[in-house]
Amino acid sequence: RSNAEKFEFQAEVSRLMDIIINSLYSNKDIFLRELISNASDALDKIRFLSLTDKEILGEGDNTKLEIQIKLDKEKKILSIRDRGIGMTKEDLIKNLGTIAKSGTSAFVEKMQTSGDLNLIGQFGVGFYSVYLVADYVEVISKHNDDKQHVWESKADGAFAISEDTWNEPLGRGTEIRLHLREEAGEYLEEYKLKELVKKYSEFINFPIYIWASKEVDVEAPADEDESGDEEESSSESSSSEEETDEDAEKGEDEEKKPKTKKVKETTYEWELLNDVKAIWLRNPKEVTDEEYNKFYHSLAKDLSDEKPLAWSHFTAEGDVEFKAVLFVPPKAPQDLYESYYNSNKSNLKLYVRRVFISEEFDELLPKYLSFLKGLVDSDTLPLNVSREMLQQHSSLKTIKKKLIRKALDMIRRIADEDPDETADKDKKDEKSVDDDEKRGQYTKFWNEFGKSIKLGIIEDATNRNRLAKLLRFESTNSDGKLTTLDQYISRMKPGQKDIFYITGTSKEQLEKSPFLERLKKKNYEVIFFTDPVDEYLMQYLMDYEDKKFQNVSKEGLKLGKDAKDKELKESFKDLTKWWKNALSSDNVDDVKISNRLDNTPCVVVTSKYGWSANMERIMQSQTL
Ligand code: ADP
Ligand code: MG
Image 1 (cartoon, rainbow, N blue to C red):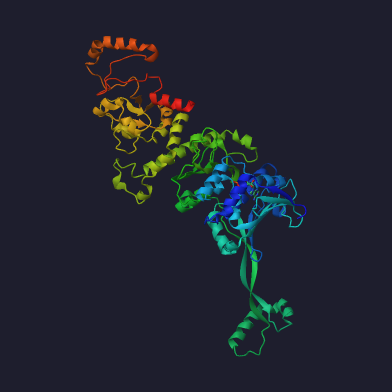
Image 2 (cartoon, rainbow, N blue to C red):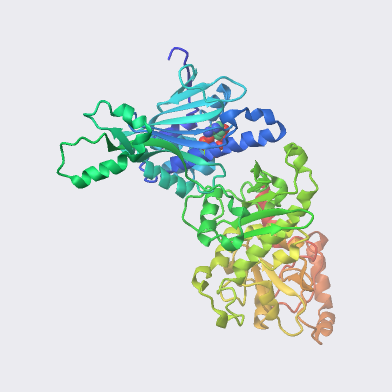
């Protein structure tokens, strides 16, 4: 085209497109989910803007916030159109030519080696999945601030943009035209598209229509009867059906010509494919597990078939009203803790009175719960204010507080319903049908998200005790299994006041520690803390249920009074004094007689407020 301007894709995009084009990935269907999700995002954006500026929607068809799918079997074109925000020329260049998201290279790398494109939507490159099924793609787009433009590419490293002077004006929004590859013919079948929309886009909150064909019987003038045209339009035509029936019965009377005959004709009409009643507005009792599962997968853009570990769907009433659905995903994203201190991204979507407001509303959940997915829809928050003002709204504090409570209850329920967790409680007779499905779920949760609970204990003083109940660890008496603080307390020896623990790099290393000799011999249980974060954790977790925590490698370990203690101290006074002088105060604070050892003659103990040896090690490794 004469007015086309050529551009080259960013190198990463080109590489990604090569991977997609040559992919043997069998699940090519995902492109439709990505396109519909983009259309829905674009509609969310224009609806959000229209809250403060009614004019922005325009009039007539432009006000219809919907998605339309159309097939052209002859030309082998599948098109998806929305009346969303649209893209200016600049947007087209930026959004469909470069990838802004950090970590893209790493992702491209990973796709290349694993061949798994399931995560494409989560990495902000979903659009390019169109090249799984198409070899040529046109994106026609009209934004309020610009003229209509066409972006086109054959995925050969370059794309072109032209001002659109030949297509029908869109009014506003975007139409994506996929020129399907030979082998992707199935996407020209209506039933296939209907099936896919139902499967992947059930929870899109805008109506999705398909231009559906319908075979209808129509009365057509009989071929030989030239004058039939006039007859048909007259009022008599209503009785013509009966006449033809009679004719048929007569059968043999072929000579008699019917005035009209029945023919099949294909007509088209927009057929609605989804039910736009939002799942969170429904009564939880009426939503099936299967629906929650599917809702999770669509919300989290997760195409695996792993079920979420738990969910909570509730309505909060009172001063601040809102509905929410929270999910614990089956798996933690790989970079959950890598980016923990740099990002503040919560995964809750915020809606105000059914209108989508934002995906990144950090004020809804604390950082340590950012692994949860879900949404909040509030009737209390104001609709027509800027995002900045919304972020400062006083109701958010109340919402956050309730969400944390509900989230922690939900996590606790994973444990309560897990038969492995309750094995030693007397609940065996209450065995439910779901037992096997729930078995081991808490351990799974703990392995994926345990660190988040620990970070919660560090960061959230208000909920520290609630979070401490969710802690799991191994100990000298836990027999290789995970145990809880409550279980530890129930096993404490008579007269034992403190909860004993030891920190280090591994259970194996700790089991050999001289600090445990005496405790083991006297059968005191000691908790093993082997995660680097545990050192920080124990600076915040000072006590639990009126019991203090005692690091057994630190000063202050008391194993019950021994009458001989004082005597021993007296008789070794000269030795301890000599020793302390020999080591000088630069090296040790004090030298004491201790009853904590059994075979080992002496140990170096950390002072009560000092860093444990393990903490010293962690700090050293961090400064390197
Ligand atoms: P993501 O949707 O995760 O941002 P995509 O690769 O799916 O990544 O889309 C890239 C960008 O292209 C989007 O962020 C959006 O800005 C733009 N875009 C894609 N489809 C549309 C559309 N139908 N309407 C408006 N903008 C769109
Ligand atoms: Mg997308």
